[in-house]
Image 1 (cartoon, rainbow, N blue to C red):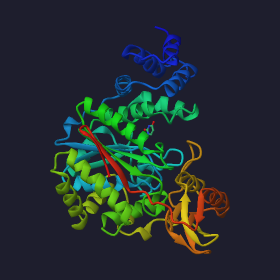
Image 2: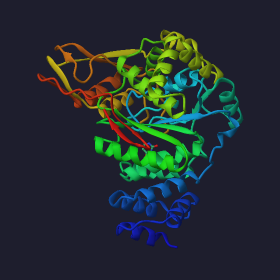
Image 3: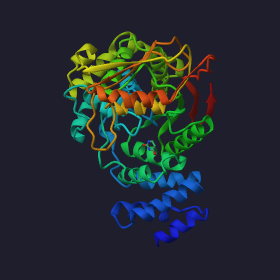
Image 4: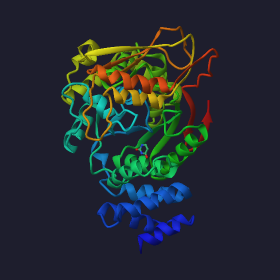
Length: 440
Ligand code: URA
C-alpha cells in the first residue's frame, strides 16, 4: 500500500476503507508518513468529505492509536461530557459536580484553551495548588472515593488525534465535520465513559456557524458513539454570545461557583441545568423532568457545591477561593470599555471577545505561553442589551496596562451598536439522540 494512492483516491472522491485509513493514521503516528502527505490527505478529506461509515472507521482507528482506558475498576455508570468549544464556556465546572452529587461517577479528562476558546484544565489551575495530572491509580481511587475527578488528557489518549489536530491547526483543515467528529469521538471513546453528552456549540464564537452544520456534526457523533455501545446525546447550544458575564480563568471559576451556590447568571444556570439533566438521563437516573428536579435539588441543598470543593481539595486545590471569590489574586489594573453612542448591542462577535481576552493574558498566543489566571473580561452589557453613550460595556483586567489598547481594538472591531434591537438567539436550539432530533 502507498500513501500516494490513498491521497489520490480521496482527491478523486473515493471512499477509503479501514486498511487505508489505518495505513495513513498509524503510519503518521509512527513517523513513516511525513507531514506533507498527511496534510495532502487532510485537505482532500476537507474538500471531498467522508461517508458516515468512513468517518466511523477513522474514529475507531484514531481511538485505538493510544490507550483505551478501561474504567471498569470504578463501580457504577460513568458519565462524560464534551463541548466543541466556546468563549466563557465554563459549564464543565458546574455540571460535573451536579452530576456527581446525584450519584453518577465522573472520571473526566478535559482540555486546555485552544485559540480564542478556553479550556477546563486552565480554569481548574486558576485555583492555587490544583493538580490536573494524576496517576491512573490516584484518578481511579478519587472517583471511587468521592465520585468525581477531572484531569488533563493523558498524552497516551488518541495519540493520532493529538498529532493530526496540530497539523490541521496549521493547514486550514480544522473546520471539517468528519475531521471534527473523529477527533472528538476518538478521545471520548478512548476515555472509557458509558454515557457521553456532547455540547455542540453554534454561532460566531463556535466551529459550527449554522444550525444545519451543528445538527450534522451532532448526528454524526451520536451515531458513532451509539455504534460503539455508548449512550450518547447532543445539545446544540448558542455561542452567539458568551455564557455568563465572565471570560478569563479565575473569573470563570468564581462565576461557576456562584451557579453551584444558587446565585449564578440566569443564562449560564439554565444551560448547565439542561446539560446536567441530559447527562443524568443518559446515565439512567430517570426521565428528563425527574433529572432536572434532581439537578436543581443538589444546587438548592448545597451538595453540588460541596462536591466541587471535595474534588478540588482532593486534587490539592485551595478551596478558600471557591468559598470566597474575593480571595482569588486580582489583576493589577482594570479598564472600562464604554459605549460610543446610545443604542442596542446589535452584534458582539464572540471570537473577537475571546481573542481580546487572550490578548489580556487569559489565553495563549503561542503554545508555550503562560496564562495569567487573573486576566480577563467581565461583560456588563451583552448582545441585545440597550446602552447609553458612556456606559461601561465591559471591564478588562490585566497586569500590564499596555495590553488594554490592543484588546480594546479587538473587542470594538466586533461590536456594532444600532437603534434596532437584534433577534436574541435561544440558549439551546436542539437535542439530538439516537432516536432523532428535537428542535426547540
Ligand atoms: N475539538 C476537538 O477536540 N477536535 C476538533 O477537531 C474540534 C474541536
